[in-house]
Image (cartoon, rainbow, N blue to C red; front, top):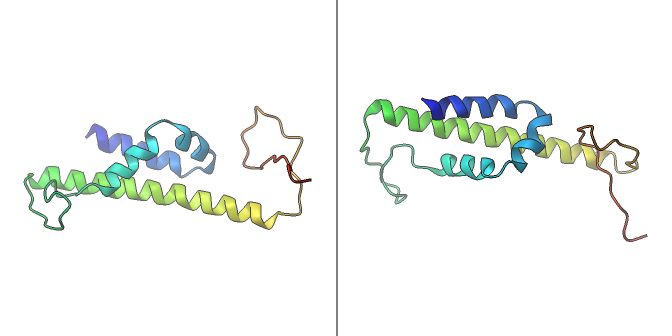
Length: 115
């Protein structure tokens, strides 16, 4: 129950693109989501493709919900990464600069080392 509550919270946080940097920089957050997303939802089988449920239906449903929430959160974070990279690509003529370091923004300030 606590795990599902935490996953719902992470899913809600991932809906806002400004939380992308915080979530990806939090140690273990992405790794835990990946582990839950790749976990066998039935609780058995050991990854060999056979699903032998050793858990009660309630526990198995909780594992399936946790796996779904982890996958959905990762998909949302992936969506924001793709959106931000596409946005930066379309503004290739615009130079970044003059941004305050205390303001969270997705505009990149790059150093042109090849000039």
